[in-house]
Length: 244
Image (cartoon, helix red, strand yellow):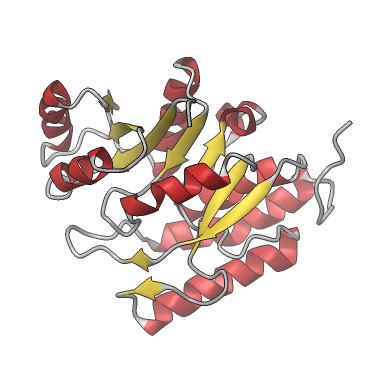
């Protein structure tokens, strides 16, 4: 793979996980850059990222002044990547719920797809360290999104993805308003409904062992309502728009 690849990781109080994350990405058999988008973490994650970047040229750091949502952090990272000519742009959690060792599989799949979604539920369920009620909520949300929007993605709320450059360029990122899980649904839908190629790769999801989850009731409610707005935006169609 000769094109430039970037993995974007938003952080807020991930100081304990960051050094190992950098080490794991550096050890991959493919060359990727790593962009830390830090929302002014009070635990010093941003400062640590700057320090690590001095001795790790593949590590880049983007500082934001405040914590105003996962979606805004990713959109800032996407804009940064597009300005610098990256062809493959990935998003990944920084708490090891997503395994960095899966990155080569995403990049391979992206050679023939515009969006690659990491799925916890493709050909079985692969989730570790979740209580049953959390798992049922996630599975129910996936089915809910599929039924209302028609988008045939088995894990639409997942946040481990790889975008080809053109798929992000096809979306007006300034008009992506949602955050949390609804951000993942909205961005995938905006790409899928244009008829761009979407593929899934199976992943194992391991809930965080260090730090605290960012899940909240507001995030859940936002995800419930966003799908109806997406259906309306797509002209009540449950299939992609036909590209001319």
